[in-house]
Image 1 (tube, helix red, strand yellow):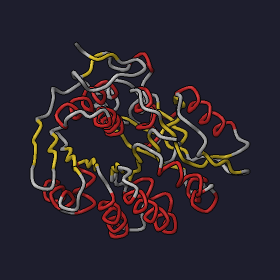
Image 2: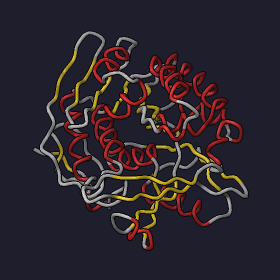
Image 3: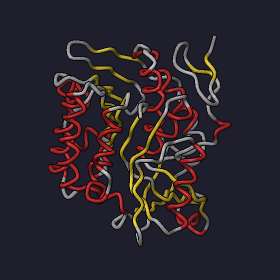
Length: 322
């Protein structure tokens, strides 16, 4: 199969019309999820992408998710369809600064049983053939304890087959039975990874330790760790070195939904083309800065940035700077 293989959830996204409760009577409908968002942007930036998930079989929302995947050029051969089930739903309320509050309805989403209902032989074969496997902490949460055990074996297998794994811990406390369970799950994944992209607020809440301390500890286990501070400074931690990349100028944020997901896509698209971390981080910042200026996790194709750091990448809607 080749390309990027990712495992995650795509949900129905309701973007409330305005800040506060007065915006709840109007909403824009979209389809998003942290791993799915990264997949969309990776595809737009020229990578082949296959998204592994589970959706319903006879509802309009699942059909719309598959249609969106088709429109974006994302492969759906790893999607499992389940009769009588519907995808999860979430709503976003934004304040005047573009910061978000989320409301979820996802307990019955079929992706929670992915490892019980999917064609695992096909999934494993596709992952072994990939140029990159991508997963997040939200995926770990929704697939449950049995799913995490199965995924851990697959990640170890991918490491043996020299398939790089990229991981964003993306900690959401409400999805886990406890912080301790979440921490154990994340720590189990880290040694299998080639790239870890870690948001400061998420990691500090999860590990109850400063971001740089956790990033150093994780980097000692093998991966390149992108420590993304709240002010957008990124420290790139290797096993024996740290590269500090100052924060770029701030963009005026309308909606910060998808900022980290798009950063990851920009970075990974550049990294897969052989870009140095300095260039790859700049590529991530460039895309994220454009994303936060639009409502919703996935911006219109025509809003994709037309200029990227030299040597970063090229793809649909993107041209390299001279």
